[in-house]
Length: 306
Ligand SMILES: [Mn+2]
Image (cartoon, rainbow, N blue to C red):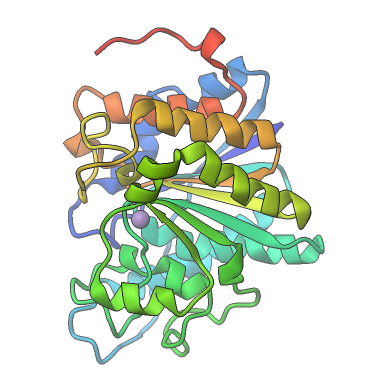
């Protein structure tokens, strides 16, 4: 596999500063070497950056950094579209607002290939606010609503050429949902597996069902991994920790099953805030999880102790 590493030092969508350092931390933690050791060819295109921001205003006074996020969305949609023709893009975030660009970009690529795009959203949150419903105003809470074509983004965010069908979206790890999001997401066909569902059935059963759906449709699969999918005890470097997240083995199992499926065509690694990390352990875990997704097995995993 040819992997394309794309650094996205975006932190304007989060309430805390620090995600800007995410791409550097993932590089320092050895993401390139981890992939090369598995036999993949790796091109690191470096970090991308916005220059001009549009003059855009919205009546919701809570919104923070809307012009910057609109500019990032526009840029990342183009970058994702172009990079996905050269290999498998791995987007090194940056906060989760970046998915408002990466997902539409790979959706456009999938449409050109005549294949449906599926999205696996590994996150504590549904990120399904609209510009009108968010009260925190942090735009990393909106990308799913935008890329699935929820109303209220017209005239503010770039028009979507290929919205993702909500029926093609599966969320795993959910445990913090605002009332406005809950109401909106219930009206869609999005599959939401909260932590209780994982406790009752096991993550493997839930994921297998989704992967079968992707395979049957000959789909491409974009995976979006938010650090807060993981339990804060193993992944402290995130500004939005929620107790009761995925364990170390649950997370690796998800990645190993994704590798076995051969369906994953692009990946977001988001919300890593190195300022909140403990001696790089969260960055290292994200690199290890990426390695599992790209083919590392239990038998060749390096032994690490904390
Ligand atoms: Mn998120």
